[in-house]
Image (cartoon, rainbow, N blue to C red):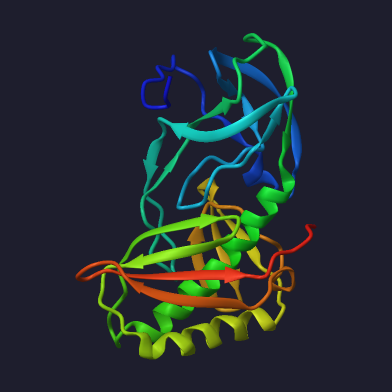
Amino acid sequence: MSFERLKLPTLPPTRKRFADDPFARSCEATVLHVAEEFVVLDATVFYPESGGQEWDEGEIAGVRVVDVQDQGGRLAYLEHPQVRVPAVKVDTVIVHRLAAAAPFRVGDRVACALDWERRYALMRSHSAGHFLYHALRQVYAEPGEELFLKGCHIDPKGFRFDFAADLAADRLAEAQRLANEWIAQGRDIVMEPDPACYEVFYWRYGDIIIPCGGTHVGSARELAPVTVRRQKKGAGVTRFYGELARSTGA
């Protein structure tokens, strides 16, 4: 069975423990639904694939979690006095896919444990990606214009951004320099929650503000210099790849 063919009953939104504390590595939860290798809990520390960030892996009651996606939910339209906030899907039901058929039943209490090395690598990639994203916008956007982000992907090894524009290579070194200058400042990264929705945050670093619901490290000191490369992806689309040095963990 695939996620697309999975039929869920009416279930309450999953409590996102990663929104409460992105450094939480485990939690206990109650099983709400089981369908072969798919399981829904009332709460989870597992981040689903969302906003370009890959899913978490780990174990539920000793069974390997290999994919995490969300379903349902509603679109929230939020406003912030300093940045434009895109419509974001909230109140979703998070579905975990296991490596084998679930050995537990509805109502069981189960223990969830993250593959922390993977999660922490994703957090580092996502935070470093924000620095590069902001630098690319600063360097490439013409006065009075904004770059349109067509898509992005964040994985444990790095990140990429696709912009709907033909962006030349002559400013790439400046964007890399600027991103690394911010990282080298080693300041705290603040995740400010939206007062109307606990799932939406504003990633703050000095005067940089980016709406985001993903998971991030707590400080630029947990990062390292990024290296950037550029690739044309057809007429009107430019892709930027970024990588940073790996860490032993937190």
